[in-house]
Image (tube, rainbow, N blue to C red; front, side):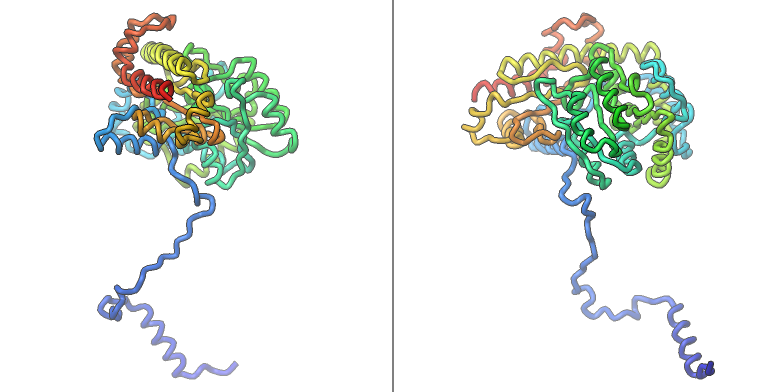
Length: 464
């Protein structure tokens, strides 16, 4: 090999030395630099393009804007618990405000044990702390589950607004399973079997949320047992979203994990039954057979949110540990909801809507198809336009059933009867009949805004 000429070696060394020198702004030519158009190379992921902000959050923000403009708005769009966080849980948060260390990715050991003990006590389901994963809201945990699980998502229609968009963001296929008004919009074993039968070995997650958002209905033991048999036949993973379980109006919530323990992940948290939506703490409880899914989710958690807020995790132990104070809080919450839910349903039925009384949570899903011809005469042909007109004409903010997986032309609505002072209502509930007899005086004193909004909606329908 021939020697490299000395002048070439010197030239290379000179260039390398120049590259190592810092570049000062004064050395850069700026003639016309700031006049050049800036064109960053931005490309939005195909999984996100076309998606809109969660409709429940969007309606809440729009309602706030209308109120700032001086409009009276009856907020029945966002399903935020009206009840305050139990005082003992608030005290526990205050006592742990000094907790500042990162906690284990899977969650505080004492909290995970409290969650496992809660399921053992409430449902007779044997789980340990090793079966529990704590996350910043069950919504985030559901998203991570879909990232980790390679398979399709089965979603009964109607269902909560974020299930299907999350599947799209995660790059997963989702399939709506149609339900019928005659069945109370509940998923039936026949409907589930029909979806699975064509490709029986395909990996799938079934979302089952009850008491339901947006329906307010739940499932009986026989209905859950029948669904469990189908799930076992096809090896489905069931994500049992039981975030409203403690708000079963009779306090009789049952988990499908009783009938399908090996394939059911129980989703819970503090947002609904403990009134702590803004605290952002969710729980997933797995069977040992799905430990690999838990492990995979913990890996993703370690690379994303790291761990949930330390003070909130410490405080959550008090909530999940139960006791007399928590039991009284829940009993009063159910008593209030047993009053207002059926009263609203009765008024809407009297106006001509098709719907049943709620069984849990704080939602109703009225079907306005009996008004189809009268609405069409006013230029209203779909649920979204119906909601726009209701907000404009009555100030009642509700969501179209199409946001929850139903056809836009179905003329169904989701309303959340949460616009009342939950703290005052809990105080007044101490005097209520525990058997849930109707008490018009209680509703007038403690739930006036909700009842006034429903009266406006019903009167608007009657005047069509």
